[in-house]
Length: 95
Image 1 (cartoon, rainbow, N blue to C red):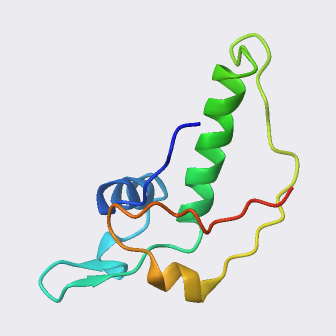
Image 2 (image 1 turned 90 degrees about the horizontal axis):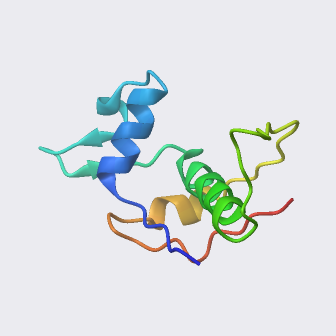
C-alpha cells in the first residue's frame, strides 16, 4: 500500500482547487500552518482510488465511480498535531 504524507504544498494545491484563500491557513512569515479540516480526508479518498485502480484493476474510464454519501468526522485535536511531511497513520476512515 502506498503511504500518503501530509505536506504544505499538497494542502496549498487543495486550497487552490477549492478556491479558498491560502493565507487563511498558512503564513510563512509568522510560521503559522493550519491544515483545512477536510484535507486529510482528501488524502484518504485519493488512496482509496489508487487502491481500486492498482489492486482491483478497476477501469475508471469504463466504469466511473461517484460518492453517493459522506460520513466524515474530523478530530480537530489530531488535525492540529499534523506537521509538514507527516505520515497521518492515526487517520481512520470509517465507511
